[in-house]
Amino acid sequence: MCTVTFLPKGKSGYALTSNRDETPKRAALPPQPYQVGDTTVYFPKDPLAGGSWIATDKEHFTLCLLNGGFEKHSHTPPYRISRGQMVLQFFNYKNVSDFVNTFEFGGMEPFTLVIISSDADDTKLDQLVWDGESLHTKSLDTETPHIWSSSTLYPQPVRDERRSWFSQWTMEQTVFEQKEIMSFHKFGGKGDAWNNFVMNRDEIVKTVSITSIEKTVSEFVLIYDDLLKEKAS
Image (spheres, rainbow, N blue to C red):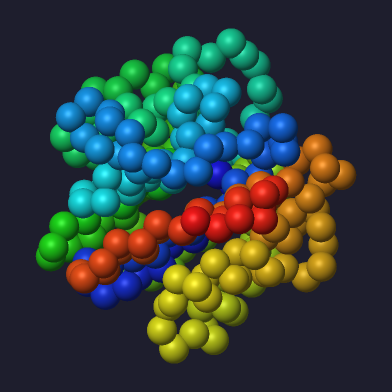
């Protein structure tokens, strides 16, 4: 939910990896298939709101949510719908354009949503940022690695530093392997418990899980590492 990376894996492949920073009291259920309208969607479920921060239908769309827009905002509930529920509702739409033009974003807390659209021949990467008043859409280069850090937890200087760690890591790789990016998500940083990729702020907010989705021409792999239970699946 709060640190996300995208790695290209050939023309129609990718690896999307997410660290969820949350209160340890808000543990999630491991990924399972659920029916969302007419689509089977795989995601770890937040039992509190029933939504998720990362979800995929394996074939066409993979989504990942970060709390906050461009800058940290004031939390002023109530909100019309939870952001995690919005992630799942996306799968009721035909495509990104249909979602952007039809979904009602008003009354929602600010967020950043990363959307991967893929088929056998191509991959597209879109970034949607809702700042509380306006939706900002941007198409990103799918041949370039990308990183996002939630603005609600990481001010701009920290986000810039984390981007430099990621950039250095990508330059050291000859190929992008899923196990290696998961290791980076687990051990990346400089020994600062507040801002490492696996962070811990006095047990109030900490990294509770790492989820990685890799899709290539020949296979699809979803790995969920529950750091609270020390169990990967």
